[in-house]
Image 1 (cartoon, helix red, strand yellow):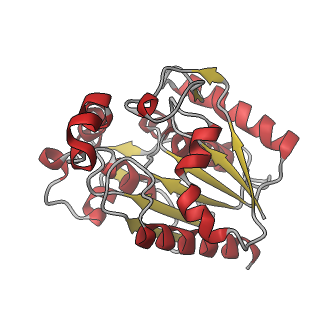
Image 2: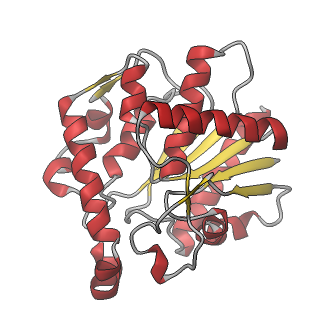
Length: 260
């Protein structure tokens, strides 16, 4: 089995390899090849990343416009054509935006062709709201407000100062906007004319400022083919034994669905 791995903005393939090492160690006896690719753009480090990892850092685009995301999807499809095929994609943060956009554009524009990968594992990431609107989704004002606020909160909570002064306690989510809403209520904030059909796994943390974005992404995927898991933490790939075991199990189920 071959898995394409798409990192977050301001990190790299090597950093994503390190970030996922804990749960991947539980898959060591499986015949899985992980391909950690670097984004095509050099980038400043993501907030707090330079405390733990040295450069270089990369991104899949330098602007959140639909044209930039489309260009990144074209780059991704070219990479897959040259280096694939892949049974699954493992993605974090901006990597989730890229992978979900590639799947949505594929379903809209080339549904007669096989999808870029057969299953998707999204960690702490959402979809591009601009892409969703471009494709005819209705995105509520509440979802837009939450998305904008969460980006600012993430920069503060993930930043070097917060890491050094608060450690794991820096993650407080976006309680002022998320509080009291169930996952199903959050999913209803984006109306889907269609859904991503391949098997998906959605891993997000309730203390992540981008928690709602992860739930929103799960809502535009086929409910019969999706699995969700709230790891309870922040914008990170948790490394505790219990969470790593759960992620590894979900990962194996997603891969199993590609051959069923």
